[in-house]
Image (cartoon, rainbow, N blue to C red; front, side):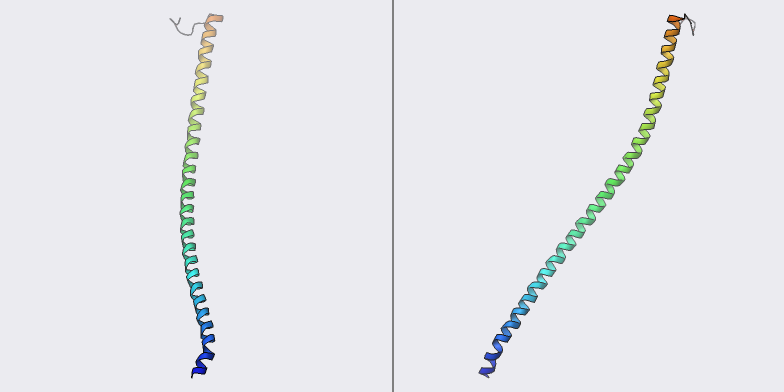
Length: 104
């Protein structure tokens, strides 16, 4: 029996080494899987944040368009009022036209 044990010892040592390497590989795979899951969670959070920013930009763009229309209307009213005022002043000064009684 002693002889058989000595013949099988190196073989058993190789099998144990292989099992240890497989065990290390399994631990490494488990760590890698945890990292991948963590990265996927981070990626999903980033996508959600980007979608939120995209929605905010769309809302901001709509507000800018609305404000642009308001500013155009105010600009037109200003220039019409300025033109009317200038025409009234020049009409009175140059041509002596009085549009309103008592307007001096």
